[in-house]
Image 1 (cartoon, one colour):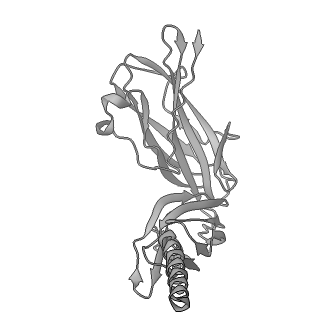
Image 2 (tube, one colour):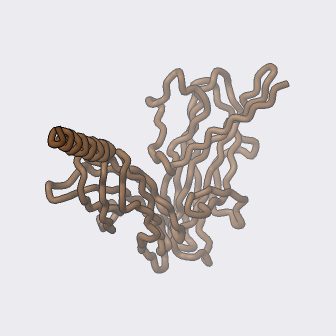
Image 3 (cartoon, helix red, strand yellow):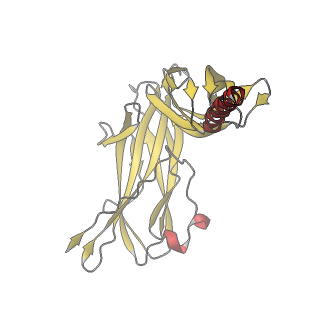
Length: 290
């Protein structure tokens, strides 16, 4: 028997944080889905709040779906997510203890209640609702698993929003058509923030198009942001501005670096020019010697 484990984990992270809707699912995307992929919930310490997730069965047959709640953290600059059993029961799902049954092409909405303990630390606390189903068939085993992330912000205390840019890696001299860059964003606050992380070149002739992506930085973590900027056609000295714009409060945090750009065609042109000059000099010397 062939063992095959299919894990389709839907994070809103690096990568894409767009919730999945029923209309977005096609015949080629059949399987188990959950929406939203991420949501924020706010409640004061000692208080409660509510939320919900929707589960879609687009598999070819009925599924028995199990749900579980775990805590998660993002470790290191590369944001490796780790999950563990919650120490306290913050999130209660409104489902039977043995899960739910979904017919083919059926969807269901699962409410949940968030109870924030009275002794909770103000700020973000991160949880995940795991949705899994056995899709095994004849001759193989297959398990599908999707995740909805829950960002619980515990209020009733001081909420700190603060971040810095540090440890940039940008080459000052560039010979290639694109410039790879990276920089670290350290969230020194106690709540996460969404931002557009970008880079842009400019010189005396003007500014070039912005390149970037939306990402989230969790509380008290450092995230490495990477990207590449297409270099212009002409050689020269350029200024690269990089950083982020936080849409929640619209602050802009940027740094800059000076880039010396020498494109490959320019190097070839210089070499050919030198060869032509040498050839002309040699021709003149031969003509003078005749």
